[in-house]
Length: 306
Image (cartoon, rainbow, N blue to C red; front, side, top):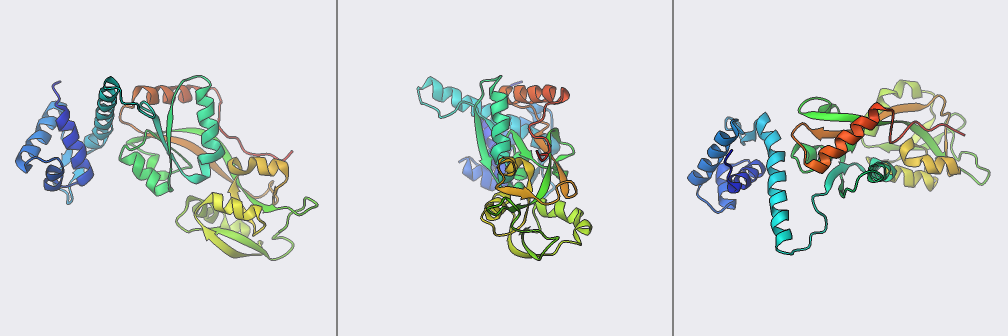
């Protein structure tokens, strides 16, 4: 296969701009020459990469997969040239992971520590809102997305590994005697709500009929679990929080779960990837986790009271 690296750069620019003339201008070549480069690339690959019938233009299924390959090829070449020229690089080909705040600590830290026990790898982490993280994976701007269940990623062209389980628990801060500051079964209690578009809100909504006995009133709203955790620790109200995020606070008694035997909202932790071939280190990590999941390893298991 004979590929000109300029064709790859042209293709990546077109994928970003979604417009031939603007992409050609950004690459400082004429539009006819730019178009010939894209057609030559498609011929070399043996697949149509661009859907020219849409407005703006879009990538075909093959184009979306090849975008990741092209980005990796161009990135590796640039890093290699910089290394030859003695330009110091902060990280060489790090494994790129996008994740929401709710799983950034300690779950992601536990995952990277577990992998690092057996492999020498570097990580580049982006903490993003879930919709931005999905876009990052779709656009091949990351190798993996660590998240809860995301329906749009549970189907081709994506793959996933279920690497953990847990529960959202209804929790309250405690008083000096270690008792819950708020109990919705005993008195009207303030509660911290999630924004309607968030995963947490949708999960809670599924179980809403079971909470009709709750005597609560909303006092705060956010899509971020971390803010809910901070507010709950300050005694501002009840909060639904994933056990992976508050295990230490539960065990130390800073937070207490309200009727945990009854009020548990189960969730899964999944690692998502695009079906396109991964770079060597990322593929090695995927295979390692895939094998360990088969033998029962999980990065998180449901919390149980002592």
